[in-house]
Image 1 (cartoon, rainbow, N blue to C red):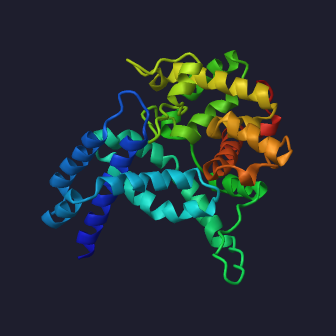
Image 2: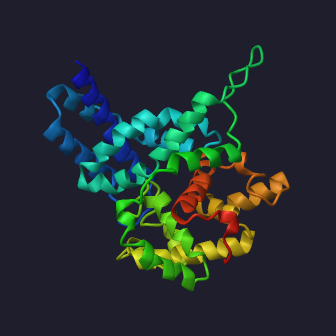
Length: 316
């Protein structure tokens, strides 16, 4: 029975992720919903028993779409700690996605984000939720202070070796960043975005080493069809460097520029105005949950790989 329950659960999760990925993506040449679900069903026919297959075939596809919508909502939601609840599901899902060619890009994308869920779960377990007022609903735990996040990320990455995929890319891409007058140390953004795996693709359409969205890629000179230049290391690096240069010129601060790379410059501009501040720490706990985790991870990664802090980088 435990084995059967596992297969049923993983079959549902796999189908849910595949269908949801197709539903939310705006990417040209993206695999469509029916193709993705059929791919999942074929995988199931090859791997699951008859009972599990019946569960998979009876999945409501509207509910499937909603599952990934809920996942995306939590990544872009307000509270870091709520992401911690996704940790076990994501860790079960990721190796399943790796098994199938059509879903491998999503597996690569998800694998680089498992760290976020680990860190979020740490804070979920260590930050107490506020006591609810009588007759009022419970409130989530507050977001961790940015300094606490930086400390935890530095500790988490302290012994992490280079990603295997980074070796052919780092020395090759640093001159591209330098040519754009962007600190070459920022090539390590690709470790955070994709673990230097150009196959990575997000459910909402970001792709390549630097996870550029289609409109951002086109804005900085790349084509996304008929051949997607985001999948070419040198071209995606140049576009990412140009975007970072633009963001740093706009915000005059690398933490804010990196936050905008993840959340969009409009989000950062609006928060700075609303909070009447010009610093990252002044808006950190009000950023989307993923961005709250992303910026200190970038900081810790650059510190681990290059021994330099974002605040000490020049250029832009």
